[in-house]
Length: 378
Image (cartoon, rainbow, N blue to C red; front, top):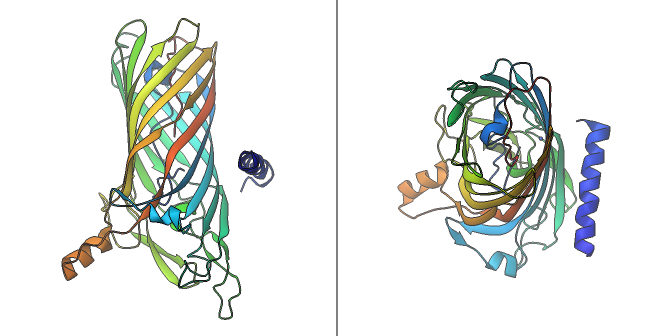
């Protein structure tokens, strides 16, 4: 009960912070996955010319389980040396139907992170001081702008259909955010320095996004749908400081995500259930640009149940992806050192057991095409 109350207080503080500060994409722990699949599945993604849709999505996770490769290092939790990330995301989206086939969208993302550890505040025992403290970050993250185009005219060939999207990810989030670290100064005092890569509000890169979303109405009750997303970050690295106050070079990595699933219409009007799977990850090498700088590559495969309720132009969505496979893969320097020494090297990262995604959307304007909406997700 006390932990639940504490999390509710943090959520309230996060919302109030955004309302007052206006100063967040997504992650699943130390593997900083800041972006993900598009906000719609099925025909709910189609807007007629002149239509608008506004929406809000909330996402939360609690990461604490450490993996090296696919191996879980259970001793970290047993010894109380695990790194804990509590992350809250709140995204605002506006979409506009330029034509019946072309849609423009903008996403304004905000984030609040709390990172608890020992090693950043004096060191893990037995060699360190053994004190657990937290660092924090919050604010606006990297804004996304995109255009999506349906390959088939929704008015004449609406099932199946596939949309191809291109966009920009702007480096609007603070990627050199600083927090307080304890027991790090010459005499053990606290210092202010750059927070961990996993809780930086932005990644520092001007990126290009490639997206696809499609659907197939199997029958009157079942709709199959899919989303694919890839972020290309050409910038190789940037310089900041680490928890010791020393210079650190961090990578600006690519990111990817994919979902596939289906919606089933229940007897209750407007109520549907969703079942699917998803994968999100960061590769060890980028498609464009160099690979120097520190990164924690890896991926998460999840099963994703959810519900969807629509009434008139309003839609509410809730999904809870549950991890079934997590892996912290080798990064560029891991592979280099493995080749040079002949000894396999693989860093670790912490992951969450599950995510909570909740959102709503409101469509207004002319509406020619009936919507079959699906879970909002980032």
